Length: 275
Image (tube, rainbow, N blue to C red; front, side, top):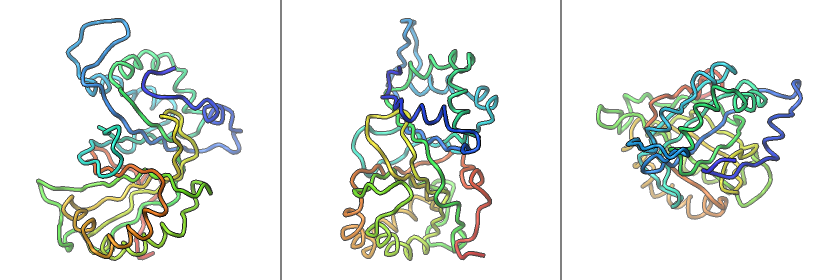
């Protein structure tokens, strides 16, 4: 039992019992909302914020012990879609196998550190995923785009957490969404967008009872570049006609990554032109 979300025991059983010959890497995508002030179960007095308590939790030792690695970590700067909760951080851990995720939970050193997460976390969603698109380089160099990165406005990653109306599986994108993507592609390309990774959800191990289909990570050279795409009239028309028809529930977050090895964790980044 945890205080910051509901555990999906059926998905937990899948993680624990997948046959070795069918097992393999899993990317656990974490959305995190912190308490304003950490609250420890033993009643100790603390001046730690929820985020500071979670920083003490970060289980790098137990992760390394089971062969897992933190491949993406970021602070949320903007929440464009999805009103509640307002997320603070997004992070991804790549585990070598599904079973290794369960093995880490059972480690004594992990359980000892977990008190800090319990103290600091108000709410979280942890989605187990598999890649459905690997990292794509932008077609245009970021030196050549209208809004290149600057010291004040650097790389800006947009995270889309999506549940489609059509319950046809995590890897299946409804036709309406594909039409929206086609309509928005030109403006995104002009402004230097790249794909760090798109993922299909196989289960939500901790959450609020909702299911999800995909999580997408697209990085722009700057926030200004992303906003240029957002305000493009053709994209707005495509969104009204197709995207809103396809999507039943979503979060769209603008984040600043302080760790971003996501594309490399899937495989070598490749050219969007297919070279």
